[in-house]
Length: 219
Image (cartoon, rainbow, N blue to C red):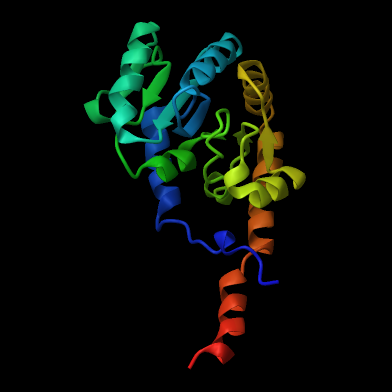
């Protein structure tokens, strides 16, 4: 068996530098968690969890990254309707201590914001979408949270859960509890992050093994 080629990916160049720059703009002294690739039906859960997190960590910031660009305006309208103090990425406006949510309404920036965060939640998993890429935040050494719906890459999700790199949550209460626990315990974040990086490294090499298997069969 050659293994799973999903583990054979490379991080974008200078991603750590990019993450550090973004973190400075978000706030060095405040807790930051990213919810990436979110779908309809998830943002309300995430916002409920964030409200609970902020009762314990008053300066906590949620970086919200919807999966599909056509939903950017829809999510912004929902934030406004709920009275959330938010700033959009496209506005270029600075964040203040009162900013609760930073809405990333531009494409191609999720990895940079993962690199700037303390904790990551990967979307498409609290609703029956099947989950998105857990390996991206794990490869950056982040503790990763996910909903239970990860059937798009069930083997990857299972491995990362079993090795202690990913924690599954069912609802807003479970999500807020997990985030609060991780924000309160830096050592737990470090351990989860190290577990993820170790698991990814241990499972690399599938592309090379596949090519070695195919080479004798090629003309």
